[in-house]
Image (cartoon, rainbow, N blue to C red):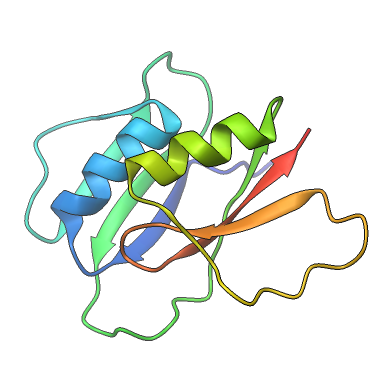
Length: 114
């Protein structure tokens, strides 16, 4: 049987990514971050871990998270205040239940209304 143990996220600035994702998803460092790697875990111990790996390429890293929210509008505003940005020009289909944002490193993710 397989299960997700950790999501590995490619970033160009590990320290900035640690600051954003720990606040966004209530994660904490498992041990001190290195310049090129950080391992994060849920504060309450429930759910998958997230690892941040420094990459050299500025190209899209072909990954994204769907973050489920009970109050999508409030979570979008909270994430924007933490440094996320809206993806301009996204072509949403009619009735879309998600908002596309990107983290400070430009990685896209969706906030989905649960």
